[in-house]
Image 1: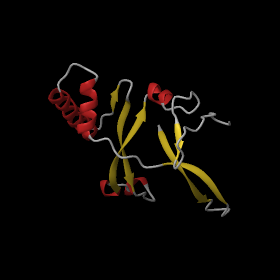
Image 2 (image 1 turned 90 degrees about the vertical axis):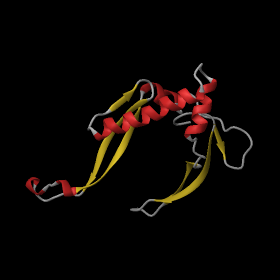
Image 3 (image 1 turned 45 degrees about the vertical axis):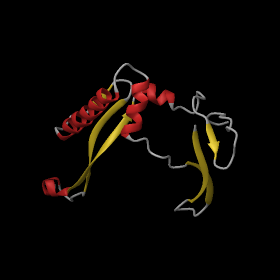
Amino acid sequence: MMTYHIVSRKNPITKVKKFYPALISPVPMNNAKIIERIEKKCTLASSDVKAVVDALEVEIIDCLQAGLSVRLGDLGSFRASLRSKGAAKAEDVVVGNIMGVHVVFTPSGKMRRALSVKNGMIKFLKQGEKTVAPNPGIGG
């Protein structure tokens, strides 16, 4: 279940203020908790799951550093992208224009469907309420 609160945002051009639902930042799920949850769903010991998760992390980093993208089946894919400064002419672009690298995650179709508001798979709870808000979907 996802918990949201209401925030006000002002349009920077028209200065009109509107109210929007925004997710409350969740407590992050750390590796130890993920490993424990995976261990309960399979026949592997937690040490084996930890070894696989650690190896996967290293492999993803190695592939991204090599300029490769990584597709992980029904999870999605990871690719590197650049933050950079522009130049007036193409010949003025040098490696010094690169300010940083960040990772872009693209969820698979299965994950997008699992997180789709339209199919009602996600339940929402407004902060401070005790019952689950109905999910009327888009336009509802």
